[in-house]
Image 1 (tube, rainbow, N blue to C red):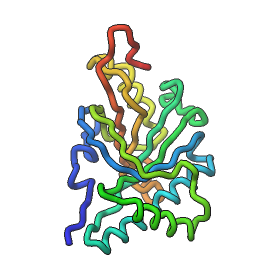
Image 2: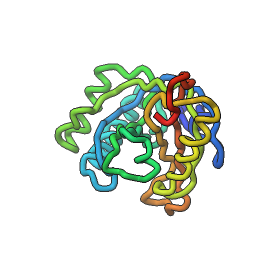
Image 3: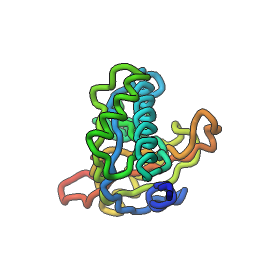
Image 4: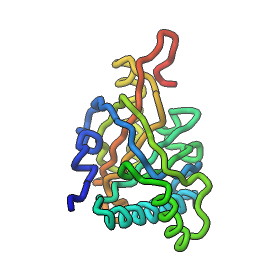
Length: 211
């Protein structure tokens, strides 16, 4: 039985270069998702959401493995949005809305989904209301690999928003997206590897690229 590892199969999505932004076309991808708002370091809902994602994801993995469709559970990812994109550069975390998510294989049916939720519920209690299995279609995006602490992302994002996107004629086409390749519990902050991705589209003649 071949075990799918999305990080190795889809290298362009998970292994961008550090120090510069590259364009990538992201295909539609199914995820387990949970929404929330507020500082991820202090919001209890964030920890609950992550616990649910992993519990459901591993329940799905073992169910599919029993069917001969084994895969490596991919890294945690998150979409981040705010009314003012500058709040990401300034790290005003209380202003952030987030969707945490973990990728799944295609072809997961309603019965498999409900069974996975049932197993997670037995451990964790009531599910977050926004828990769902949904396809994310980002399309054209700019991304880079950030090596370092999460709070050191500000200058990288400022460069993207104020220099890279305007120079290429792009504006925002979706929330800021992060893929956490390192486990912060086991990795020094200076060595954390995070994919920073921004879906983009060509800017219109009367638009501001920073909005």
